[in-house]
Image (cartoon, rainbow, N blue to C red; front, side, top):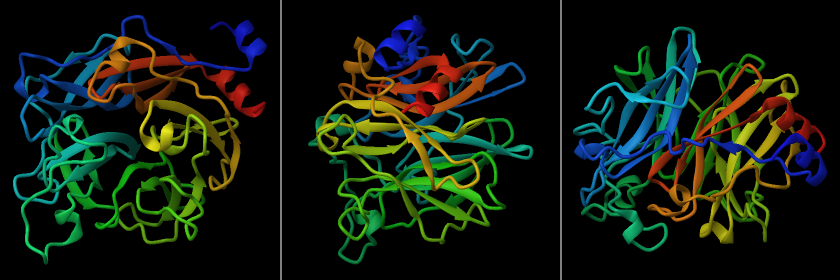
Length: 348
């Protein structure tokens, strides 16, 4: 859609790259033969680093991370035929590691990721929101009994060697889509998160929503959270969650998020909002319309039929790059002119 059409309709859409998917499963490696999706992506000194979620065709559906690099953001080359990060052998993340999001402080990259104590199984063969559960006794903690997804923090300097720092969410909450802001705000770190159980009148939302909280320490998140964005009934975004790390722009913090129709049972689409630079609990604007939806076979024919799920983004010159998981099976790239998106948001 060109600029004239955008002004005429008031609808801005991200442009999907003609070479999509930019990364596909590799049948030569068992651990990534079925799935590659939901990548964290970082751009520095002319190189794109893609840390992607991968899985093979095993019944338990073990999930690991692979690494690929590119100089143009489109043509990616895997750096190894082995995963660069895997579930631990006896720790809390021994079941699966998923959905990395990347920021950088100083010389080190901080990667938030979701994990489970037990493999989820091939969830597309189960009922909605059902996963494998471990055998355990009645006294087992809820995180193990229900195979709850927690979020943890990794450190790396090269995307090849990692240090596990541990859990940064509450163990009895399914709290995924945990994303750290790329810089301190008023002297504090900031986090977006999506606790699935925080619904009902006392929380001010009836479906899982996006919350924001602050901390003096990247491993200690105990300050109260503030409801930031909630879903909208009877819309494309009834259930929502954070997607990519916030991007600082001249007009505010740009937030790319995902929304799901039909109470969380339908298509995954992508929305955008602007937060205040000094106080990101303030939502300056939010687009009514989605900026990306499933359209192509690689976004519809997969293990979630009809899903675009962004997890990596950056601004290079005047272009916004958004990397996303497609149908829980592939990696896609979509772009737009950043000023056009900001103007759309300011006029929302």
